[in-house]
Image (cartoon, rainbow, N blue to C red; front, side, top):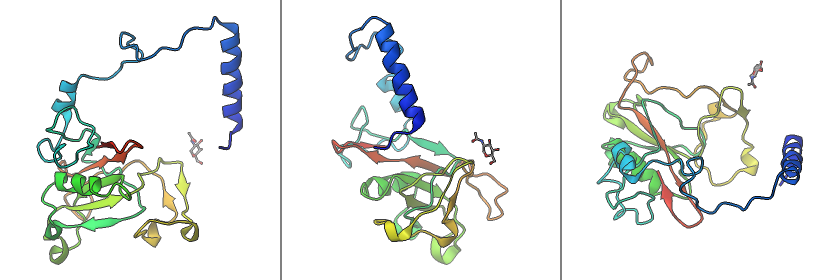
Length: 204
Ligand SMILES: *[C@@H]1O[C@H](CO)[C@@H](O)[C@H](O)[C@H]1NC(C)=O
């Protein structure tokens, strides 16, 4: 790992403040500490989750959800927070009938997908049946001041990267729209994150 100067400075600061103060015991899972146990209850998960009963633990046995009913909580209604790398397009004719089918398609591809978006892409009726489609990615939207150029020769595993999207320019996350002119926001467009940890647990 390469340590930047700020990292070294903050490490030194941490080190000296540890020396200055008494050596406290490290806390282990102290759930009485409200600075540590900041998480809502399982009931709150269920209230907020989308796709309960569709993205279930039966279908995804390692899904991180409190009950078998499952569901996803890492989602952004009416916002497209996806990136540009590894673009897999799925349409109504591919079986995408809802955002839940899109999130499930991402969970089905844990080796390549970390973001999904269910939105109108205006491909024309012959392609999308004039319905919202599903695009899967392995990178998120970048913030405004960050632009990244992908070195394709040094990159592997990505499928499609539109040349117009390389370099990937940062910006505030686009909204989803009802019209190709991008004037009418679509409240039923939605995007979300998916990840899998080293224990094989899937989060969405
Ligand atoms: C973002 O970029 C602009 C233009 O280069 C610069 O003026 C500004 O300081 C940057 N802001 C941050 C927070 O990096």
